[in-house]
Image (cartoon, rainbow, N blue to C red; front, side, top):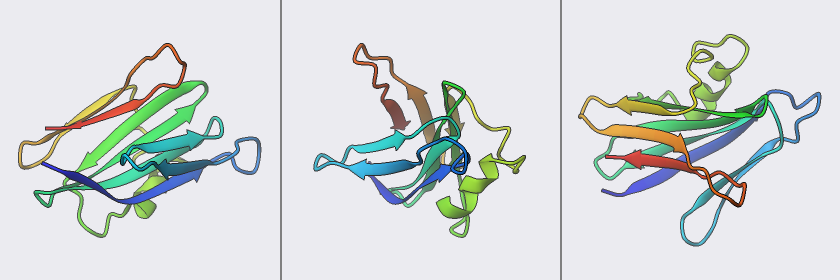
Length: 130
């Protein structure tokens, strides 16, 4: 099973106050890195599996804590750009921010998102799809 990122966006809720935004970068090994400029920033990936199923993973940072969510069984018109603002300002997804998350899609596949602690201080987010 292969996964392909088909869309990525970042969100800076506090852009007018103090956060420095965020950005996705990809290295030659297909590792995606999300750089978050401060509290109130987040990024979302829209991912398509070789099976054709799509899901989105959100990674955010607020008040010195990371949060995550995953959305499965999304219709094509629920794009990352459309969903991302719903995590802010009491949007329909604003209550769905967790320290780790597991979601099962209609085909029985599981999306798991969690933080891995490393001594270097740069915590990678692990996304498993099985």
